[in-house]
Length: 344
Image 1 (cartoon, rainbow, N blue to C red):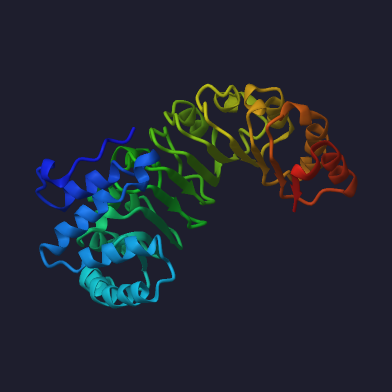
Image 2 (image 1 turned 135 degrees about the vertical axis):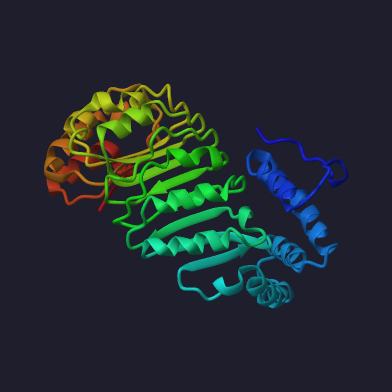
């Protein structure tokens, strides 16, 4: 639950970290639209002759008047001052892409091509306002576990809401060590092919989206079954060869108790038995979106299973099937689910 906003005079402000924590506490629910902490931070910066304060105010105003030419010109002028001052030698470095939001690095992407490239992460988080980043994307050729070690050395990131690992061949190990430092995370995504990158036991009280396209082994699912994610609304998993035909490994999802708010589900590489279990589970009655990324060799069997089970999904608004099915199988799905089906 978000904390009520307190005026700056009641904060005992010592440094930027105090403002970052106050802003992080206003990331959720109705408090997310309260801009007073940001404007107070902008005033605090301007009182110290820091141009980030002026940029923060301009970008806040642009959120409500995005095409204002005067504001856009002010933003361009201020970014030309703030960006090199904040990023230093990282400005123009091809291993980092930084988009400023509300006067701070809001969305940052790192491209880790070699292990030594982790130094760019260290250097970025040594800059002012870096801890205020809201979205962090780590890609590249093959990031390793040193990425996690580097992020752990940074310490707490209370404002981080989105964290994504996008390197197809990445192997950064278990993410479980990170969770205490990113407790306000809302979205966690892992798009790695290697099995060495795992979610572990997810302890993220504010997470609403969790997705992974790498094969998840049985051990991973056991860890996920012990996770604490009470606000989760969207879950995407790619099953490994040892779990694709083992519905019991997903019982913690299907019974709905561990994920009371889950509405969107995507199961990649899942077999017929898994979908059969889903069709008769308590979760089916409240799902609003079901994504079937790949049917594989069982395409026709799974389509034939889902077609007569439409009544098990009374709230389903979209069934997305991303696999080439025979015309007959498509017609059966459409006959059962109507315009809720999206094939291809």
